[in-house]
Amino acid sequence: MARRVLHISDCHLVVRGETLLQIDTEATLRAVLHQAAGDAARNGCDAIIASGDVAHTPTVPVYERFLRIVSDYFDVPVLSLPGNHDVLHVMQEASMPMDAIVWPDWHLQALDSHEDDKPKSLITDIDRHSVAQGLQQGAAHSVLLATHHPLVEVDCPWLDKDRIAEPLELMNWLNGVSKQRIRGVVFGHAHQVVEGRVGGWPVFGAPSTGFQFQPRSAKFAVDDQGPGYQWLDLADDKTIKRTVRRVEG
Image 1: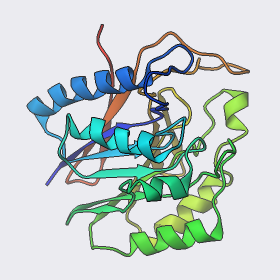
Image 2: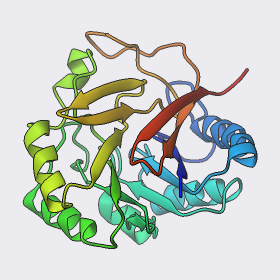
Image 3: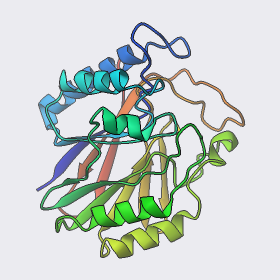
Image 4: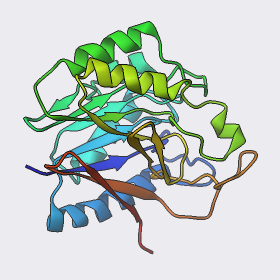
């Protein structure tokens, strides 16, 4: 059967009452989830992917607050993964859900591309071993992979220097480990809508639930587009359709 997945990213939650770049990131996350819940009431939602930078202040109370906020709007499985502003052991202490979501037809799998407190991507041998173990779960005919860092250039030099290195080698290896079941990849970090390909695989970057980076900027710059999210329709024919939505008003 077809599956519908809500992809959110780069929430950058801070201590309650504080703002980041003059943005109340809890308010923008709630606005995203409120609108997405309205979408889901019409078209359904089977799971949520939160692809990193969940927190900007990576403490247990902030992560626990994220889970409470999500539960105010959705009661579906969540796959979260760390971004460069997250701290992995703190996410684990807060019981953030980081295990693969495996259905009979589709498999949602995270690949950790982060290093605590450093913007550049890092995929270690431990990360490869972990994702290989995850891909051995279940027997779904298709796998959707989620990372934090982009696998393609986003035409922002200050971001592109931190993207995942040798993406084609990585995807070929992952596809082999998964027994040729990888169908596409989603990621965050770029705070903007991205669409590209690595070899034959489509890759989709999500906007931030908070603030956006200016497209094609040579250095750090914030854009005036509003908070966003994307829907991923995972079809029976093993294809992925992506729909980007911005918070209205």
